[in-house]
Each structure stands twice: as C-alpha cells, then as structure tokens.
Amino acid sequence: MMTCKQYIFHITSGQSDEAGAIDRFWAAQHRLICHRCRNFTRNDQQLSTILKDYRENILDPDKSVKR
Image 1 (tube, helix red, strand yellow):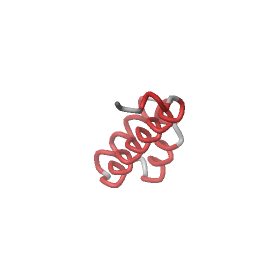
Image 2 (cartoon, one colour):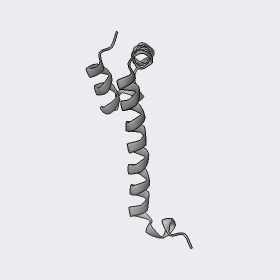
Image 3 (spheres, one colour):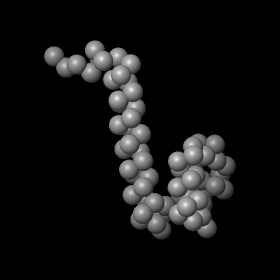
C-alpha cells in the first residue's frame, strides 16, 4: 500500500503521468481510503486550473476581456 507521503510525491512530481499500471493502481487504492489525499488531489487540480487560466490570460489579455 502507498503511504500519504508517497502519494503526494507521486502527484506533485508529475510521476502520475508516466506511472505504470501497478503504480496507478496503488495510487487509486490509496485515494479510495484516504480522505486527506482525496482532498489534496481535488485542491491540486483546482490550483492547476487556476494557474492554467492565469497563464493564458498573461499570454493573451484581450481574450479574457468580456464586452
């Protein structure tokens, strides 16, 4: 079983995109039983969305202006 520390490192280091089936399985199992890691994952996804929107706004500020 994956620990919280391993799970958080797995998510934040970008290893989840390159992980094999076994690592993805253990990460999913951990997320099922650990409410703290579920919350962390949700918050991390929201932060990624906010940063992506901010980055797009910086690159093309006229796109975000609503008239």
